[in-house]
Length: 132
Image (cartoon, rainbow, N blue to C red):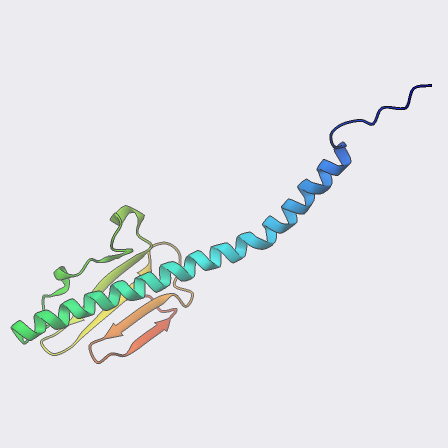
């Protein structure tokens, strides 16, 4: 008598269980990944705003005035990429002879605690109020 042959491969039930497990893991991991990406863009924007502030302070050293200096900053973030792929818009709504304010807000959607302001005295503000 011949021995029964053992089938090769996986059954459909086993494959469905694996697909279900991968789906559950993906559903848990994807929101965490999105939050990580948003935090990375926010940190890059803060660095870009501070580079802009350093540029304005350097020019102030030569001109003794901040007014009219916003054109010396890259007004989007990440600044090393194309403006079309930017995540934040950076603006200088206030630039007087003795003070400035740099403001950054997301390009899409509302601020929801993701707007950032930096003033010439070093005050940093993170809030949900859009820039003027």
